[in-house]
Image (tube, rainbow, N blue to C red):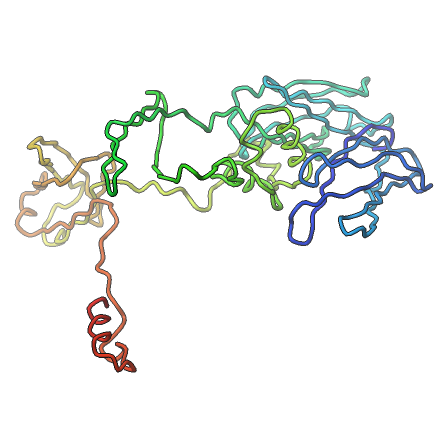
Length: 399
């Protein structure tokens, strides 16, 4: 925006998407040097620029092979507003600066703050008499991930956007491992107890690794993929680095990633109405259940509003009584059950005892069905070109 100081970030990378170190200078169309580009981390950096009327700007830079290139900066707009954000541990400090001359719809702005396509904050900003407006957004209680700031005019036209990465470490939890039995011999048995706080909901898996492996060199983690790389466009080089530390230098480097990568598009009409997105592929929530279908209902009269009486006898001889409605097509389903090992079901039909003699029920527990593995290799396919009878017999045994 003409006359408004703006931060411009850049990223230098090769044909393979890997960062490179360049040397460059910022110049105007009069070939005057305005600033020197400095790489802060992995080919990324930033500089500040206040565009002037009737001036164009470009960057002249040299790559590692000493080849010189020129990149033009976008032409500055005559009117508008610039959105700047700086994060602290407690809040995101937002600065909105507009140009001297603005249309009427720029005099009342709205800042929407959203995460995971969920609206979190809405701030109204009056810029009628002020060129510079400041506000703060609390972020200390927000979930880890990309936080998006979107600035709109009074008629809901997007003006500026900015993303910020929130890392309050809420995606992590501390676990304490206490060895109960240790054996360093070959195939020795080891027993460990894993303790977490009683308020932490966990789904844990265990991996045994070589202690000599330096895990700090792992530049990609599950957290970095889910929370960072998959949320922005383009390739993030060594994404695990940005979540490994809370140092100011790392946070500044992470902010450069936010400035140099795009993000997903939002349906602003639904966002304004606070309508949650519709998931095309729902998460898998199938778990243990008792479902099935009753066959033979047409053979008995009075099969409307049928109820199935079930007694579940568990392996420890405990019992559970269930009254399950039956649909018109004979199907039923109960998802509020969980049991270990095996269970025996005794059932009868409520209100219609005739069904006990003519109807049959197919039960299902909702678990993955087991199927025998079969081989497509026939006797004619079995190594018919081999002359080694011993090898033939051995391969026939394995196949």
